[in-house]
Image (cartoon, rainbow, N blue to C red; front, side, top):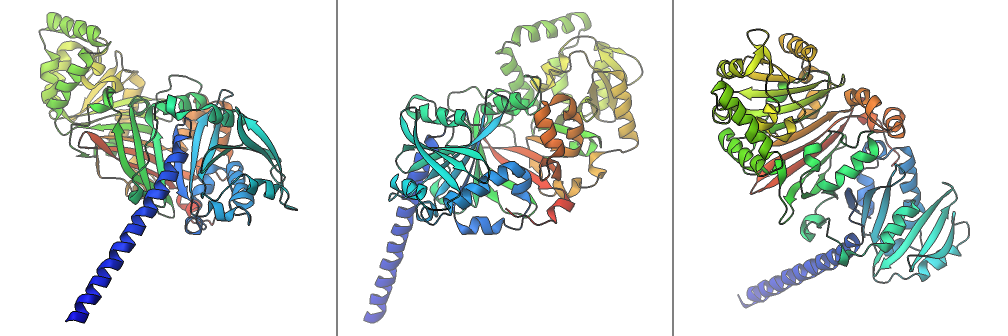
Amino acid sequence: MKRLIIITVLLFAATALVTVVYFRHLNTAGKYANLAMRTIPNDASLIFEFNNDKEFYDIFAGSNLFSNLLGQDNQDELTALQKLLLQNTLLKKYFNGQDIFVSLHPQKDNSIDFLLTVSVSKEFSEAALEQLSKQPKNGMLITPTEFDGKPGYIIYLNDLKKRFYVINKDDYCLSGSFSKEVINRCAAYDYRREKQAFVLLPDQQRSNSLANLYLNYRALTPLVEQVFLSRNYDIVKNFRQFPGLAALSLNFKSDALIFNGTSEPQNNEPEGYLGLFSGQQPVANHLKELFPSTTAYFTNFSVSDPIKFESELAIWESGSDFGPQRSNILGKIKKETGISLQKEFPRLLGNEFAIVTTHYHEKIGIVQLKDGSKLLGLLTNTCKMSSDNTGQFTYENVPEILLGEAFSQFKRPYFKVIDNYLVLTNSTSEIVSYTDTYVNRKFLVKTNGYNDFNNLLAEKSNVSFFIQFKNATQLFRQDMKLSFYENLDQANPGWKNFYGASWQLSSSDKSFYTNFCMRLNTDTASLKSSF
């Protein structure tokens, strides 16, 4: 018995020791990762984090995911850096097992460049790079320099014939980029004077994840402005206005990038339109079953309590710049028709409504109704009818008043009530086109590849964005800046080899559980990669 007690005590002590060592390691690793992340300029749109160890590279060695996501040029650059620096015999011991952050930064010259930030072990010193510069046949030329008064290096990579700029900005952290503009911005950036743009995931969660993705929603606007000709392009517009940060972890799948995590509104910031959905329960998404086969992208909104949503929307709009206009329009409708739209419509609104953009540049609003015939009665008295169930709104901005700013693109739209759905468009031809789609069941869900993609998505959400790349490429021919369009359309490997992408928000305690998915086409997924 005495022996058993001694063994039990020893086992308990060993377990406690292992636990202490484990969490001490997590705390140390987390400290270095925090040091690295805070040096990244807060104009970054997104940050991809992974751990520089063999397991990560081995898992994705046979997958085409990253080669198609990055494109050939970026893949060649990162492969060269991995081979010549991270895996170099002189430097390997400093970088092994360290966290690497790859951040995207829009530039003034219509380009988007990345910044590589890596934490290093405490044994690292600049003498290691000086020793590397003297190594024969190292494939590079290393020249000491300064960036904004901080020590750095210009590394000329012979195979790429490109300069890679490196700065030793803080202890245990190096930053590098092929863009001198990015590295100068990094050198001048002082996190103590700037608002924090990203928050690192907890240490234990990061230690159990293959990779992580961090997103600053507001910083997506400069990214979109770099890519598209119009500065007010509508793609993911409602997401870009959300004052929040996302932190997501990667789930491995050979043919798809799948990230899950949370999106949190920033403290003391008005949450905007998307904030109206954080108080709703997630809803099963069925409206997407009615979207046309020509859909390029859509945003689908879902509410569990339409009356609550309408009440909170009215309060939010009344307190915005749109408030006076909203009040005037509703007052005019009441005076001229005797109908109080803000009271009648919430009782008829269903659980889902969406904005769909087709590859023909058609804009279609689709709203689920509880009773289409009753809504038709309201519309008959407030709109100009052209047939029993078709007409045009007489008063401006009614869709925006009733459904929010996502519907602001419909000023005085044409409409049709089909069964228990309200369809909105900006032309009669689009009404005719969607009617043909509905009657003849020409839906996106019936096209090749959609169901395979849809099976990866969450069944329920409150806000969901989807893009089908083949259809969108036809649309973007007119909308994108030429260099970005050519890259999208011609690069192989490239984004044209992906079927689609989706970003879903599901309310969870005043924040959003978040799913991001990007899946390869079936024929591309079967090929092997050299990444």
